View (tube, rainbow, N blue to C red):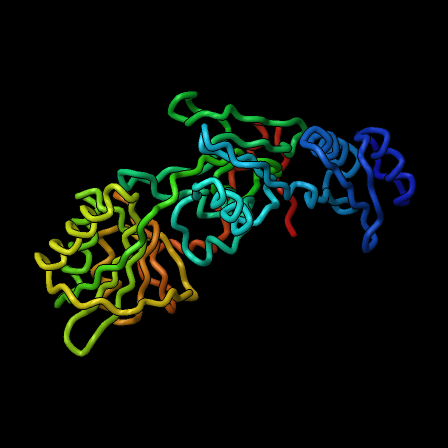
Length: 337
């Protein structure tokens, strides 16, 4: 391996020759400026050779914030990983599509943070099941080289590297581009209000709605002097809106009391975590205001004023992949900031 150049000028010359990308000096470090996925892969490989610990160089991913026009035929959109989810959602809205009903904290993320972080790009799809929105990924691997996935559901192509990228915090490499699978945008959004006596009834009502395939996308829960109120937001396609609302209203009557309509404001609570269903009654019993998102058969996301026992925080650091495992894939461990 080559020894590190003494000054940035020589380092810049060597990297420019090896990677073929523009660069600039910023705050005493050499910043490489790739504009394509292939340039980013070459820059990562060159940095690994001339500056293996990354102490003197960094790679800017600012160029990867593009959003292509959504494809209404495949219900997908190709975006740069630096793009903001809010901007992607705005582009999809014009095509009658959506990424799904996301929590306020999730909507505020970049595509990269949503895919690489604990959210792992997961959202609820019809049938109230969890699925990652990522159809294919382009990743500049830490060991050099470029990984480009196939734009197909993972169940159709078998085990691939995506499993080491989704939710793993960029340990395998830098996420550059993503093809996202979109969903049909709900045409009718309504709220059903229920009064319930016990925490168990809150959980039973929501789970019963999911078992009936009612697309409940958000639930706000508050403790009252007697019992609890649950405001259930249902987002339906037009042809089934009346059926979904009627089914949810009947379930509210079966499990408690159907309340009159009232205005519900969206609220952002400091804590968000993934919670198993069996822990929901305990969380409701604690008495603080709660909002439930990503309501799937497998689990849910709970937002609260503080940590909830049994919930995995969605701002936690990822579990490190074992260094021997990374070595087997010829990947360098990520630099420690």
